Amino acid sequence: MKIAIMGFSGSGKSTLAKQLSAYYDIPLLYLDCVNFKENWAERDREECKKMVKTFMQNESWVIDGNYSEMDQAERLEQADKIIILQYNRFVCMKGAFKRNRDYKGKVRESMADDCTERMDLWFFTWLVYKQYSKKRKNKFKSIKAKYPDKAVIIKSRKQLNAYLQNLKKYY
Image (tube, rainbow, N blue to C red; front, top):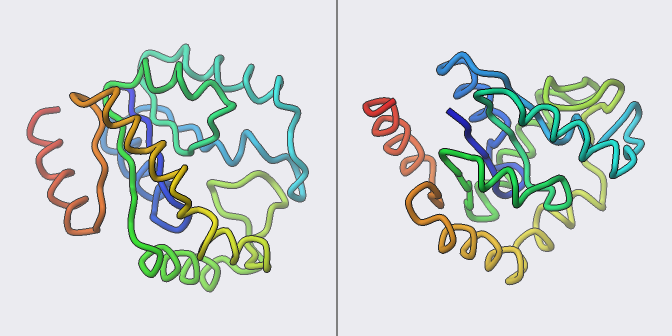
């Protein structure tokens, strides 16, 4: 089983990835851990691609994150399931603020070493406005159109819970 999880910041991608990784007992890669090195320094793109390619050689996997420049096309092609969490901005804001409250000054499992949780102006602007661009929404729609049998766009927690119950019946 290979599962790609994508979507908006604050939607719970990492939490879902961890749940599915544990449920299916398959390895998990957080792309934020690939993108960032210590203290929010960005990793060289070629090094990122190499890390992702190596991980995708596993027989099964869960990969959490968007990062189109990290072999996204190959990830989506290989994936058996593509789950896109496309919640509204208020749900994502609530999720991000809760995460910030719970992890402020700490490093989450889904982040690189010394990348402590923070809510700065750049991330707030991304969270509330920029990530909801028409281009980004259309990108998710195009993924769904290209892979109609294995991609799903989930727009609410209720929809996600129903999807997961159904998924567990078949796998």
